[in-house]
Length: 71
Image (cartoon, rainbow, N blue to C red; front, side, top):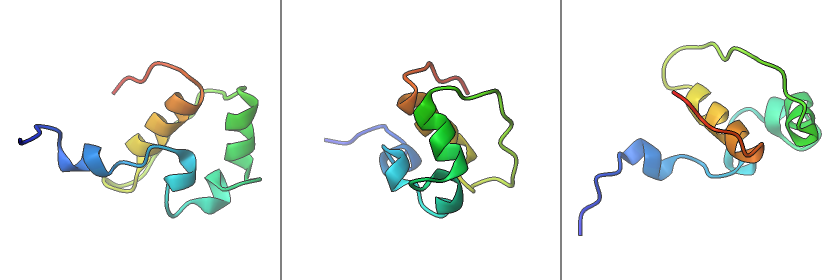
């Protein structure tokens, strides 16, 4: 029937390859992508206005590294 999952969660990308608009950071061969793929990611702060994808990027990084995600 009806799902109580928010629309933002339904539409959230499931993989880094599906993340739009930051290919210079998370595209193949990009600096952040290489760091994520190496598994040696330091702490970082994602900063920007609401709605630009900070939480989505953090979630995708946690999934890629098999780490727990906190909001």
